Length: 154
Image (cartoon, rainbow, N blue to C red; front, side):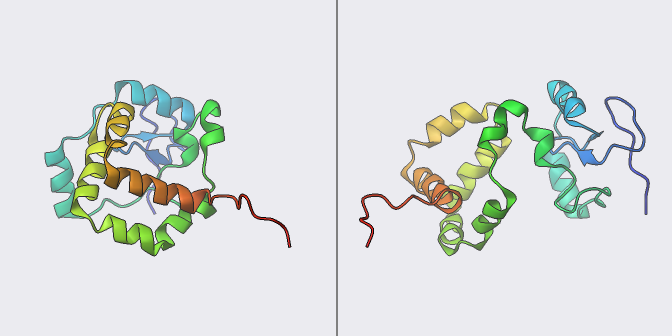
């Protein structure tokens, strides 16, 4: 078992359990993540392609759900937007969502968003695309099922 890398921001040797999804730099906390994010230089698509050919790097020891956690991304002001992990797992179990994701056009839209610098303006643009709206609505129905309205109790 390898020792955790030192945090690229504060230098703490024992706590750098997380990795930047853009450049794979190690960091240890939300504070260090935010500092790193301000000056992150993501890897190029060529570097990512070479990495895929070589296979995934060994994952650093850390939480069971991956090398980073939601806490590293969300600040206190974003807490109200957090979707519980249990509900997120429902996305992976949805046949309707899987069927939508078979569409190559939708997959390309999602990749474009993932690789974009200004994700929010691109999301607004894509919300004009019927296929993307169908995808977003499907995801929302899964994580926030509509409440039964206008139903009289028996």
